[in-house]
Image (cartoon, rainbow, N blue to C red):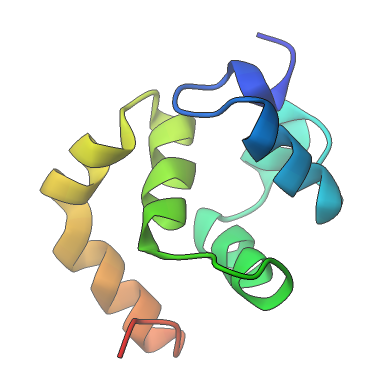
Length: 88
């Protein structure tokens, strides 16, 4: 794997979105905390929702985003709430 689009659950559109927030490589993607990355997306990319954090975590852990949602949703929502980013 050499490109963000090669990570599980991502494709050309995801890669374009990350390029827009100055994440160009898998190394840059993996180096940033997934919740901080989500916060950047929420701030800079209109329409960013919960599926984005699930997809980010899924890509890092080589899991489908729905698996992340199913198994880690509560933990993720608590962390997002602590950051002031949980859905209302």
